[in-house]
Image (cartoon, rainbow, N blue to C red):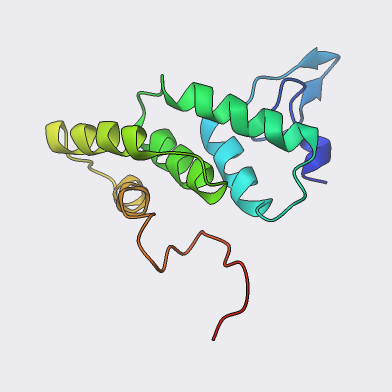
Amino acid sequence: MLLDRTCPDGGWNAGNSVVYGCPMSPHIDATAVALLALQGDSSPEIVRRSIDWLEDGAHFCEAPWSLAWSILGLHSWDRPVESLQRRLAQMAESDPFSDTATLAAVILALDCAAPGNPFKLLRGHIT
């Protein structure tokens, strides 16, 4: 069902991909969360297009919430996120976040490369 809801150019939004014949635009945070859910998938073309869409969009994202989720989504597919993390850290330093949900997402995104990332699919056997 998740793949069925992919927007025509890749990515996801909070609802249908096409409404009354009009293609809907994907959202950064929804796309990142969908890609987290699809980790380990055999990477059909639509997933690859969505990863590329998210990677492109994240570089222009100004919202800390969406940027944090994009970092988590991209990192889960082993895409480089260091420059995005630096930009997110600068946002956090210049304007502290007032809501705890954004703060939590930012903390997870800034620390996603550390062992124990709760969103990273573990490959192989756990011993």
